[in-house]
Length: 269
Ligand SMILES: [Zn+2]
Image 1: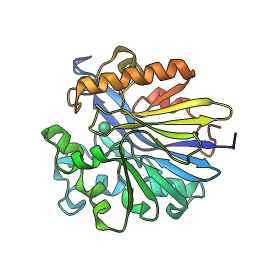
Image 2: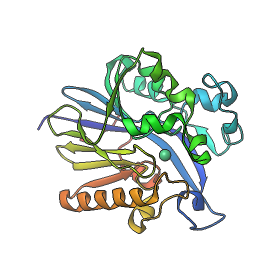
Image 3: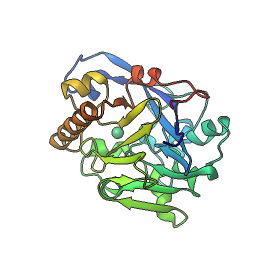
Image 4: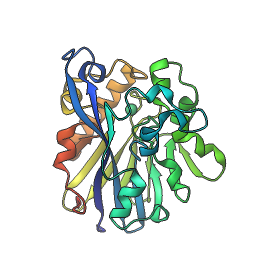
């Protein structure tokens, strides 16, 4: 198998209310979460999975995008703080990659903590589920609406972007090493990413399939899930896959999962 490397980076620390992320659990407690993204260097090209939180948005929510994101003012810089490395495009530069080097940006979904720096990647193909694109423009649920920022994904409509809308599974390079796994529920078009590594074996980047290991094992979804039933089905699908493939699952917001991954410039191989 070709040599593939996976790097994990964090764009912002996010202290969140435990009960808001894991329905009715530990009311009043907070959880020190984070908003990571991943770079996969594959012999055929470089892939990003998610783009984290926009540092530009956190610095000035009211002027972010065409319509601003004033509702973020209360949490930006308090519950959500950018890390020193900055946005995804700045962090990959520290590893020696320019945005133009990125062939494909695969987005798990378009919530603000996953799709924050897309506009830096206008030279890349943006891979996202069709259902996610549609729902992001006008979510029925007001909580979901607050998580989708026009400033993040609005540029995709500009025509400057090559958007690959997919429906269902998708093999990024056609060799089975990097595959999108549709896992709807948390959001309408949520997807995880399965990566085959030479030493580490099968890795599943679960994004927001569940918020933490506890949530994943106990099937605890947040109260604002787009569709709880679908989310549970996706959670079970991945647990079955994890067992069948002896895979390692890394959820985006579980601090321990992130800390298990090597610190760049070290990578998982
Ligand atoms: Zn989300």
